[in-house]
Image (cartoon, rainbow, N blue to C red; front, side, top):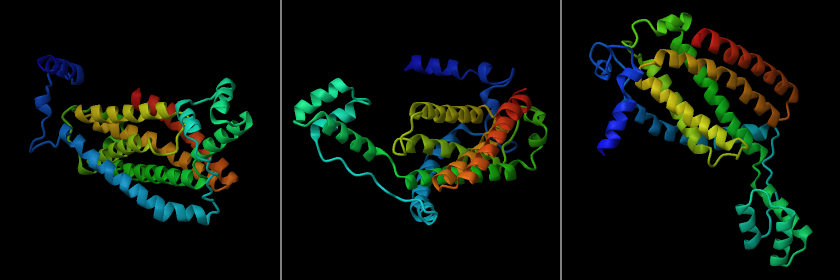
Length: 287
């Protein structure tokens, strides 16, 4: 136990995370300055559960009806007939080779063609409907739209939005306002909810990469909160959220078969992404 404590003390050394001559005790919230409080990070977890509940309600009572009104069908693939042997093989192997199909055909007393057909049906059975994908995209679009809008509202009167140098004036002795507190907690809760919902959402090819991305984002938000780097943190959130508004909107139009609108939105997304991620972020924020 003492070893773990020593390791944590070394990891959280003020010499690593804070400017010279500043200790963690200097950043304790007080009556004069409302510093960020590391204990508040735990508040994001119940917020994440609330977001998940809100999401499921919106998907059922708002997004799905809107999708159906746009002509998106909730068609489900035909189910493969029950077969315990083939089911085990399907679940244990991502890709079943021809040699394995031959062996399975002998086991279940079916022809190779019948086994291949069963596997195709079983694979199609796992594919989500277009309406399901539309609803999930609607939720992400709603979040990014709200988060960016609230971020602009929150930061509009803050000096560091217009001059990034204000992120470092008097650092780390900078208090956090209530609107920025909510902006941080809301963003952190959303990424917690994404990390959880990813396990029962539509399975993506980049599942591992996206999960790592969500966890990395949570860690970065947490570290910046603990180190009282909330000013630069809010700017990074604002810059990163705006492009996703157009990306998710383009996906929604794709699922609704509005291809021209999708193309226009994707073109806007590309321009915004290049401007924010390759221009504003490295040149204005990091530099």
